[in-house]
Image 1: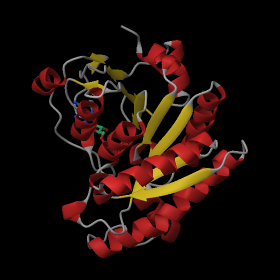
Image 2: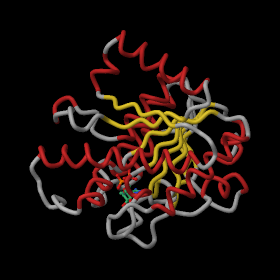
Image 3: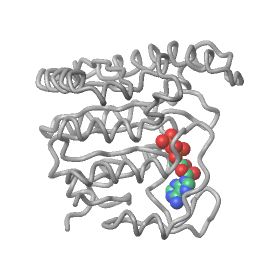
Length: 265
Ligand code: ADP
């Protein structure tokens, strides 16, 4: 069985989900340095001949950063308005960072209905293939401003899994603020132990305590595990890694950092 590093090396089509925890600092502001470092690593992967699609959270945080108000509003209209503002900021940051390497980015805002409809599915797929074939990096996010609760995909872990399946990716990497799945929440328990390899997701769910999620994230660890369920069914492995650690992907490849890998069935 290949290690997480070997799986990264062997994969050609890679979907990378970047969580809000990875893109923000401890005050909830956009962490430009972290974003820069991730883009640099993704550029490295591309230089090795890999194709990359990004699924990025962080519109809400970027919205707060841009206008510096409304962050305490619970009203859905304000939340969606913040995402509308922040999405522009987020894309500007990606455009600037990839622009340093002469790479274009393309934005795709998707909702659950898009994945449920055959024609829309086809169009998403064709657009993704065209962008990637032409060397553009697609950056996908949920279309928060139109998605009301009932029709929301709800979290970008699920969105990244749907994308990986639709594109026929070789690997899904989810970057969060933890090294991987632990037997219990590492933010609450210092003795939590990292689980490096998962072959049996049902068994894992019985073994671990997955309660508690952080302030800015929406999914917590449960949505990451269900994303793993979705992709491994189609033979696509998922790596959950700590995107807040500089050079994390390079370090997983050289073996100096750990992560959790869910193997494809
Ligand atoms: P993101 O915004 O990156 O998607 P989330 O905050 O939604 O991240 O989810 C990650 C969080 O889930 C971790 O920071 C951690 O506090 C929490 N968590 C709860 N249980 C576990 C567990 N068993 N293993 C790892 N993380 C856990």
